[in-house]
Length: 146
Image 1 (tube, helix red, strand yellow):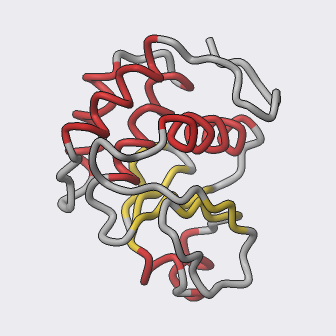
Image 2 (cartoon, rainbow, N blue to C red):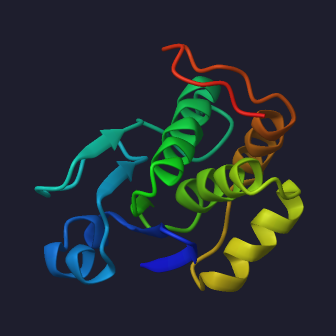
């Protein structure tokens, strides 16, 4: 598990279930990008995502909005997928770009520099660019990112 921006961690499914690790990092909540939520007592939001072109764009967009919302509330959040190498870095980079008003390229580079396990699927990078270029309001109407 690596802190890739202030209060934003990227990690694996196993790390998301490690109470001691989450406690030590001061994590407040977990955003799961897998089909199975981790066994944890922490609040978890689950977005069933997959690597590759079949991933739902809306799930990606909603996960990014959830991460940004947590950061705006000054909550420490762990974003995880199975290996912490593709889905979670892609969502984290998009959230960093929008939240900190950085370029998407700079945000991906920042995540890569902070995390050894970094191998985003090209289809997820394309989704990240689409969300970055057109940050619409999520389907639940919760927030519009600029």
